Each structure stands twice: as C-alpha cells, then as structure tokens.
Image (cartoon, rainbow, N blue to C red; front, side):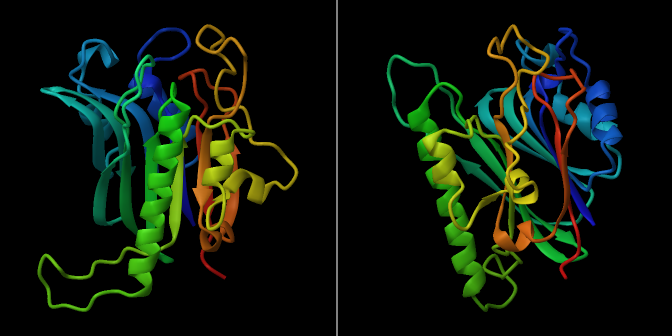
Length: 272
C-alpha cells in the first residue's frame, strides 16, 4: 500500500487565527500514516506568513524519517513561498517546474510552481506532483493546466522511448508515465479548465472511486470569512488510468479547522 496526503495548510494558520504546524502534523497523522505528504502554502523567513519562521525546517522536524523537497514559487532573498513534498520513500529524482505566468494587467496574480518527485514504491517507481494554481486569473489557470498536461505528455513519451547511455548526467533514471498529481488547483467542478485538466489520460480520483458522487467541499467548510460562499471543492487528486485502477481508498477530513482547506488522503494498492 502507498499512501499520499495533500493539503493546503495556509502556512499552518487555522480558522482560529493561530499558526500551529504541530497541529497540522497531528491532523495529518490522524488520517493514517502517509508515505508522501504534499503541502501547499509554505513560507520561509517571511514576516507576513508563518510568523517569519522557516516552515520547511519546522515541518521536516515534525516528520522524522522523511526527506523534504521545497519548491519555492517566489524567492525574494531569504523570503520564499511555495509548495513542499515530504517523502519517506526513496527519492529517485526531482523536478521543480515553474508554471506559466502570463502578463495580465488589472488583476492580482503571482508566480506558481509544481514539484515533481519520482519515488520508489514496492510497486515500482511512481511520479508524484503537487502544485497550487493561480486563484485570481482564469487565463493563468488555463495556461498552467496546459503546462501540467504537456509535462505529462513529455514524461510519457520519454518513458516509452528511454535513452540508453553510460552513467553520466545523461544516464536514465526511472521517470514513469504513472502519475499522481495533487494540490489546490483552484478549479470548480463545473469550470471549463476542470474539463481541460480531466481529459485523457488524467482522471479525477474522487469521481473514479465514487461514481455519481460529486467532489467533496475541500474549502470553506469552517472559514466563512475568506470563503463566504461556504463549502466547495478546489483540491483534487488527478491520476493516470493505471494508477486509478489501484485506488484502495480516498478520504477527506471534513472535521478539522486547522486550515481553511481540508486534507485529502489517497491509498494505492499494489498492482493486480
């Protein structure tokens, strides 16, 4: 079994206004032991977020036995902001993808990033990617989804025709087409960009596992100040079909108010 958790932790700030990464760790563990943890909205040395702490170091300390990959979308000297992946599985290789950031006047937007890690599972290598797409701009989200799909197409093509060379910077390290993509994608289920993302070969893990059941409200369940519309879905697992066939369970913790988002946890069984 391989378990992956995805959660926008809002810099550890709960709906009570308290920043508490230890609480984040407790909630994550309460869902079950995970092999890979994908967190969005992580700050380093930024007085505006996370009390100015190095949240990468703090989270790594809360999860002994894990390796940490931090993917900063923004680097402004010591101030950094982005996504984080923690893995207790061996890391075979890592990619940091800056996503499109087209010019668009009159609207707030920021640089976005995706971490891609190839992890070694008992079932073989698996690509896990986590990201946080633009909130304010639909045009940005569409461009970012197009890039994510292009990355998948490239990985699948390279996996189908691997190069064969001697050990060197050109050596072939496993990078399969099998993909788990997760994070706050800022897509509503009826959004045209949702349909753009979830076309072959990617499938919505929740809908694949629970036919006829809508994606759960991962945002706004407890924080009605930032999200006056109430509960709705912005967070997803997107899988290639070979991975989707291995879903053992997918769950959401609807009770926690440790962030303005709810954590999602996916379990994959060994291939049949």
